[in-house]
Amino acid sequence: MNRILILSSDKELNKRLKADLTGLGYIASPYDKDKIIKGEPFEKRPDMIIIDASSVPSSERANLCQILKKDKELKNIPLIALIREEDIKGLDWTTGIDDFIFAKDTPYEIEARLKFIFWRFSKIDTKDTIKIDEMVINLANYEVSIKGEPIELTFKEYEMLKFLATHRGRVFTRDALLNQVWGYEYFGGTRTVDVHVRRLRSKLGAECESLIETVRNVGYRFKLSEEE
Image (cartoon, rainbow, N blue to C red):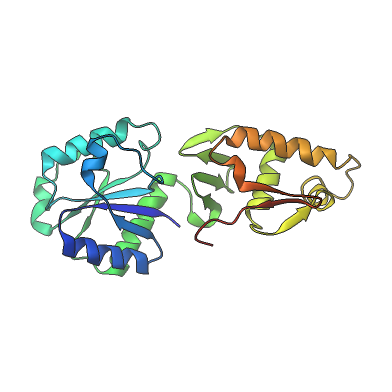
């Protein structure tokens, strides 16, 4: 699920927007903008940040956007202004805001807008995307990225990752993985699977390598996320 942070000093708006976004299937929570200004790291990387234009002055919005866009891990996430109709003429695009939604929109209108924004930023249809924690697997163009940075995988590494990720929680023996990834006509030993898993974990790095779990004396499985 996509994680959305809300930057607003309006407690009622925070409560309503969080409820609307949670009801739409997002993980949403108000966030203290001062933590961003102080450079405190996020516990979990957000997929979008909504900034309330009515409670966050333009100069402060510009500062927040500048900080976020300079961060290598956050520069590609959409920064969305929440505005009232009377604010639209004064919306300054040079501050770094990527798009906007209206505060009075219904949950269904907000859902449509957010889906469009996520699609525009990912450039792919959500049905062709597997997103797990910080990792995105693009099924349409055989690409994998972590925190927006592409990961170079061989075709077999990609196929193994895709297969395990689309069967999260299920344990597969090495023989089963050989059959699924290499095909029934492959005569190599099961050590091939271990070698590819080791290489795959190395490329996924410290933050995502643990997603592929070893089940002792059996094989491998892809870890379920906290929300599953």
